[in-house]
Image (cartoon, rainbow, N blue to C red; front, side):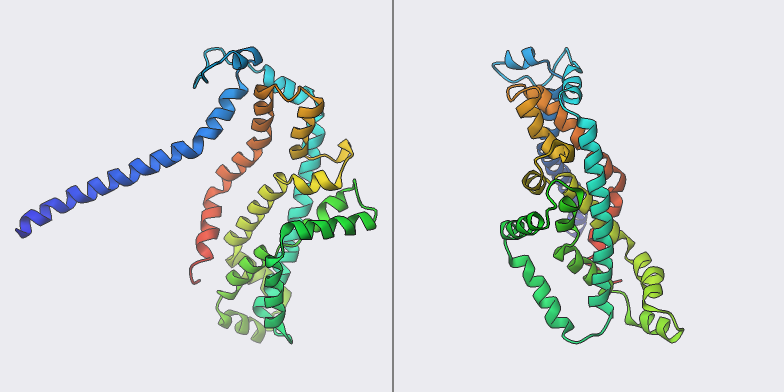
Length: 286
């Protein structure tokens, strides 16, 4: 009887693996299908797309005319440049604020630190719409509408990212900090020589998430800018529909979305291991 049970174990393990990979494959197809449909639609001509009574899942006559329309209908290059400036500056300033704030809450000792951190976390309870209204009033009062500082300043601090990095910093053994202080190491040197290298995966993850957040930002740029010289690529999509190729040209719209989404897809593919490492590091003891 024991021999029979032992002989069944490999078969059960194989069946379990087959079931797991089957459902993973099904789920992957469900997740990736919108991207496939977006790419497929972008290479269909306007006439071919409108003549399909039943959507076709492939095309025998792909075209690039939609990509030409997406690039030439509006100054997409300027929107890309604006988005790069907005994303780079916002992410850089946010990392500086996040790293120093997380280090202060995790390693430095000062009065009411825990109470201040709890109040800081309570900011996450405030609805984003309420914060956006307050930011709009502030930026408008400072006469910073249609400017890069007006776009950037409300996004340079994130309670969630500070909390995430603070928890990661707290996992670094205290003995390292005390040994460094005995050797006469300053807090700044300890931060840059010890804390940041150890927690680099989490910092990279925060950076990538912020880049994605900035690149996909739509409501705030749309609210604070009405000058096309400061439009981002997300606002460029709306501009294309209103003043470019029109609302009915879905293939050209999909081509524009492919162009705008490509940098984020490449970014994720390049740094996917770093993202996973940073997420796993947040739940394990260093």
